[in-house]
Length: 235
Ligand code: CA
Image 1 (cartoon, rainbow, N blue to C red):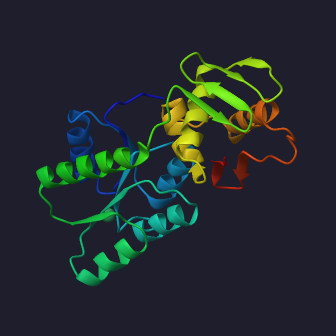
Image 2 (image 1 turned 120 degrees about the vertical axis):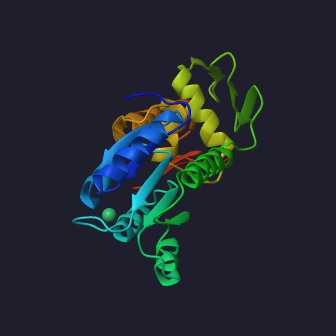
């Protein structure tokens, strides 16, 4: 449950010496590192926690790295993945990248190069997440939200106080209007640590938003749940 400003990395590597070396070096660079030594453990960790990056070996016991990245992408998780492989043929590299890896390093690699690529992948991902920002207030329908004061005036004319997390989630959804914001992204941006609250936690926030801002909360016009993926705001 550590909060880590530089980012949390899931390190999936079964060779213990290399695993320890990578872990130590990544931690020295200021990253939080969670260890997995086989593909099943990696999938389990990804399902339960938020990571800024996966460093993923291809040859792993139980479930191989290619299957891990494929499974992650099928589940709509777009966490950056840096694959490591002992194989140096370009065919393997192409398969890894086609299945959804973002970058690829062939063993033996230079440690400095790995650290540079890790840094690049994490900052690129963080940049994408910063969208065009809304101002201090935002109006839609007959609702107005004041993000700074953390309150809203609803279409009924009611004044509603918003919790800090409510205001943050509204801002995130509105800044990404008409796009699905994944659960992972919401948890990272709003909760800001790498352990998931339950799906119900976000659902309850969305239910509140509907209660405040929708004229017919059963047929929402603005706040939509996209089953198994995330949530979307539309104007
Ligand atoms: Ca291996």
